[in-house]
Every structure is written in structure tokens, then in C-alpha cells.
Image (cartoon, rainbow, N blue to C red; front, side, top):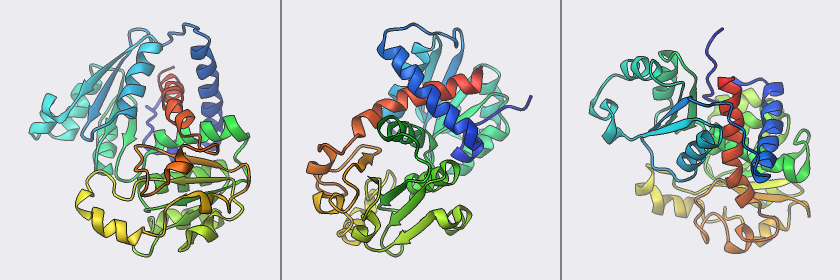
Length: 300
């Protein structure tokens, strides 16, 4: 049987994705009830981090412990990757010693190369192209609060970055409409938009994009590695803040999400992220449960 990887949401079928989200909520209830469940006893997860992290590291490490396994943190300083060892060689060696690998890096090509030469499943913990694990958590939060996402409409406000790309893939896989509000010059990849067909529409005015929608989501204006563009991006995105005025245009029961960390006063106002429509803390916690469901799926 071929090794399954999770490099983007498109690596799972729509049915598998829905089952995974359902399983994530089940595992969440079990953990909240104090139930011990250890299907991954003696399994080892290698976690390669070339980008810093709070939620990704803690959720994967805690998740493996809760499932009875062990997680191993590897930074570029700790491995030969940081000294120039070919990714192909690292993949062959690492996959002969561990059961599953998670990578958080910059170039998406690195993770596809690693997966190609790995004999065990590889999980994308984030690349500059997509952030699929975050979307599992987001979609779990949506279904837990509002039921099925099929046929609903979400608005992504901000840069056409890895989060935006993952929302496009989620719209394809789970069949919902996606409005993308971004300034010119910051559009998502046109091929991804084209592949999503009429599910995705790009807007230049956030208020227009957020009118009568079921969810509003945003992300920081400058991601890791783009710090030198901060001032330029602040000018470009000045009118793209998600605030009370914008949220008032969405449906009354619309949810607000943010993958965190957030910059209050920039991409989102404090009143929105800390307000009644915000589910960012459930969304953040769901990284743990969704990834546990993913680990279980890939290893059992």
C-alpha cells in the first residue's frame, strides 16, 4: 500500500476530509472527558522546524503524547539539514528510524522532495505555499459552531498567501463559496483560483466581500520572512482591517477566525478578535485535535 502524505488538503478526498473533521471532534470530546486513548504507542514523530512556531510545535508534541507516542523536535541547528545535507538523504535516513515526519519550512518544494524520498507519511506543518493543518482546525471550529460548511460563504480578507491558498483548497474540497478581499498585487495564485471555478471570487473592497457572509477570516499582513515589507504592506492593506464596521455587514451569526498570532489594531481590531463572534480560541485548540485525527488516520 502506497504511503499517504498530507502536503495539502487536496491529498485527501472530500469524504476523507469530512470524516477526519468528525473524528477530530470525537477525539476532542474524549480528551475533555479525561479518556485515555493511545493507539500510537511506541510510534515516533520527527518534527523538523525551519520556521519558528508556538501552536504547531505544542499541538503536534502534545498530540503525540496523548495518543501514546513520542515527538522529537529538530531545528536546523540540530540536524545535518542545517549544514547542507541533501533533503533526499535526510528523508531516507529519518524515515528509516521514525514512523511519521512533520515539516514546517519556507519553500514548498522542500517538503515535496522530502515526501518523495520518505518511506513514512510526511505532514505539512506549514510552507510558504499552503498551511493545511490550520484549515483542518478552522473547518472543525466552523462545523462545531455552525454545522456543515457546504453551501455557505466565507470571506478571507488579506494577502493571497499560504492561508488564502488553503482556504481556496478547502472551498473546493468542502464545497463552499469563498470571497477573497485583497489589494491589487497581492492576489492568490491564479491557477489555484482557476481550479476552484465559481466557488472563488476576488474583491478589492473588504466591505463588499463581507456583506451577507457566514464567516470572516484574516491573517497578518506580513508573514514570516516578509518583515522587511512591513511598512509597504501596512500602506497597501490600510483599508483591509476587519473591524466592527466590516463584521456588521456579515450575517448576524457570522463567525470570525484568525490563525494567530494576531496584530490587534492592524489586520483586525481588538473588539472583533476579542468579541462574541470570534472563535479564535476554539480554532487554536482544534489544532491539537484535528492533528491527532490526522496522525491517527495516517498511521492506523
